[in-house]
Amino acid sequence: MSRSFPPDVIVLDSDSLLHARLGRGKRNPRITQAKSFRLAADTFAPSLVTPELVNEAALAEAVRRLRNETGRWEKGSILLPDSWFRINLVELQSFNERAADASEVVRWSLKRTLPIPPEELRVAHTVLSRSGTSAKLLVVSAMEKTLAKIERVFNDGGIETILIEPLGLNLWNAISVRENGTANSDRLFLYLRESEFTTAVFRGEEPIFIRSRNLTAERPLHQEIRLSASYLRDALRTETFSQCYVAGNGSLAEVASTLSTEFNSPVATVALRDFAEETPSNVNGYDAELTACTGVFTG
View (spheres, helix red, strand yellow):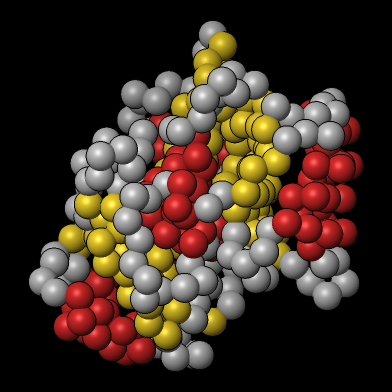
């Protein structure tokens, strides 16, 4: 646990809330406490980019129960599904991150790719690389209205929000800090959820491709994987990766086999036991989310 954040992390979804408390271990973090809560079905409603929080009282009740059942704590980090964000790789021909209008330049760079006014977004960016005056950026954005409502509900419940970030990026944080021997080559990362998946390719420490998509009955997971593989081969001109990683809950063997066949590459499935020295026995089905919680403290 190298990044200094409060030990409590919340994974929030449209129908559930998961709390994890982490502590230092000899080599990996310890998850000393984990508890999940169901949310009312009408807590969030579908909307552009980020679901809208339409039933604040339902979330407030879950936060109240959380505080009552997990002891006294006042600050925490929140992780949200990747699909609640737009994650873009943006190249700007002229960019000075120290300029007073740097944030506005980044915000308006999204105008061509998103169907909503950029002023309605909360935007964070990281400079990945530079060449002269041009720069390549990782830009993460979500609807300001939803994030502000979530923060207000937690603050009213006595929990100050330290950060709000995507699950998938923190899963990758947890993976990449433990890599040995492949960190300078191309690696594929696939994070699977019940109704969505995130695909990313990293070259060294730099992401060169990131996409989050919803799954549908018309295009199920294995079809999406094969379509993504075909696109990556054409777009990145690569036939293989030094390592593929698959994260998700439940059995990942079939997905790993498909990736191995498509890219003729070694595939590793992400298991919580490899990232935490101690895990609670009372919460099942959240291995990927709890692994992402450990990623909050890496970097």
